[in-house]
Length: 155
Image 1 (cartoon, helix red, strand yellow):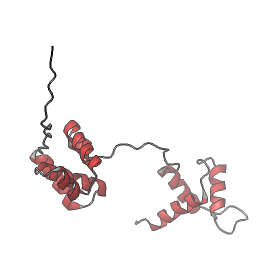
Image 2 (tube, rainbow, N blue to C red):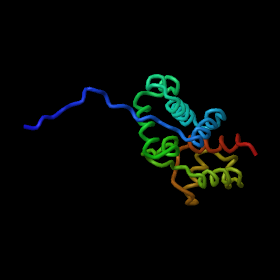
Image 3 (cartoon, rainbow, N blue to C red):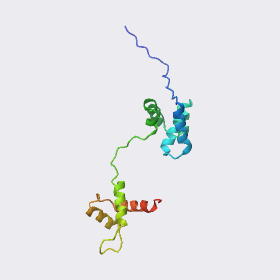
C-alpha cells in the first residue's frame, strides 16, 4: 500500500531579487514623484520586497493590501518590472469625447455665431455639433467641461 506523505513545513516564499538596473529604475520612480500614486506605491513595495522584508512590513511600507502584495509579487516574478508596474487596461465603455471631438468643440465655440444668436450656449453648441455631423450628441455638462479645460490649458 502506498503512503502519501504530507510535509508539515510551510512552503518557502520565493524571494524577489532585483537586478541593479531594476532597482535604479524603481528608486528613480520613488524619488521623482512624477508618476501616478499607484505606480509609486508598487515601486516602494518592490524595493521593500527586494530588501528582504516580510509581507506585513512591505504592505505597511508600500501602503498596499495583502492581495495587492501577492499580485504584485506574482506579476514581477512572472513578467518582470514593466508588467508589475504598469496598469493593465480596464474594462468598460470607452470615453465618448475623444481629443478630436474636443478640438472640434473648442474650434466651434471660437467660430462665428450662427445667425440670430447673441452668443454660443451649450445647447446651441451641441445642436451644431450634431447638425454638422462632428460626432454624437453629448451632454451640456460634457461640453462645459471641454471648454473649461480648453480655457484653463497653458499655452
